[in-house]
Length: 128
Image (cartoon, rainbow, N blue to C red; front, side, top):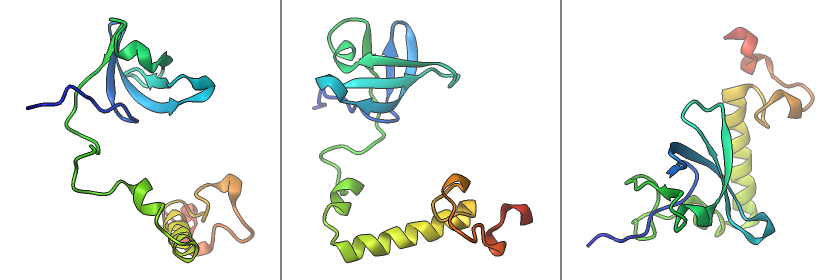
């Protein structure tokens, strides 16, 4: 038996007003769940009330077998991170800064947030 529920989250495909869109953000500001979705070109964005995807006839969430579901045998990252103590969070944050430095040259992940001495010579993008 297949559930009639579908996952609405970042990356979900929706069909709205004759157009297939991809959800890029969910926002509950103002007490109404809003979906920010981009078109297939990635050049145009639309903000849509989530309720318009369920009963209005204007749109629907397209089913997909991707993404985390409630009955999956894995723990979502948010649930795992919520169990970490401060020491573990600090270690994780430090590890993430090293990964960002390897990938971008900057511990914060971008030049605008660079600290003194960044990028270090061995991580400078000019060498690549």
